[in-house]
Image (cartoon, rainbow, N blue to C red; front, side, top):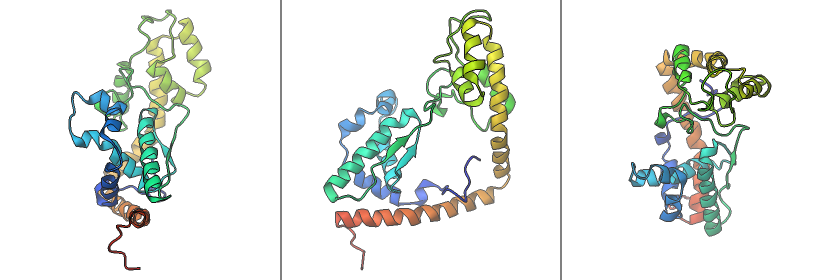
Length: 257
């Protein structure tokens, strides 16, 4: 809904086996202690205990490096994973010669969005505003969002810093630093009204995206065509990179020229 398939490759990852091959190679270059120190592992290790979970950041590194990506747009919570991709590319290059681009993270002015419970917004936490939500569902979800616990009613001074609602205002409400933050601090703006303003602005911004999403849902055959064409474009690009990887490692056994 937000990406133009004529400009980007949208595809099913498993349709491109080069991801899995580079993941296998990278898994020989990363130590277990390195992976167990990553924040995502530490956060969920008591609930998830498999190689698939432990090694997922290595697959993410392969997802990036198999395209020789330079800048990777991510949220701040993925910064360590970009560090790992950069690190494993460096290790490969030090062993086999300059072959892979060593990627860097690309962050926006607001690199981390908070969800309803003031943790990072994530489907896993069920604290997100989903594109699939209706405008009424969005309004209902925003009402549940955490705000300053010391601001119990209108008139109480509040602190917008660290408030998930104000963070979203900074994205979806022009001039939020002047129109939202000061009256929140003085108590002039109550949380109910503040959430109401955000609801209107957020729904207005998401409306064209949701309309495009609804249009694609009505055309499943076209969606599969986009994915198939995207897979072709992706495989064409990664084929070149993997040829270089195999050449560098001297394992390009099937190469005839």
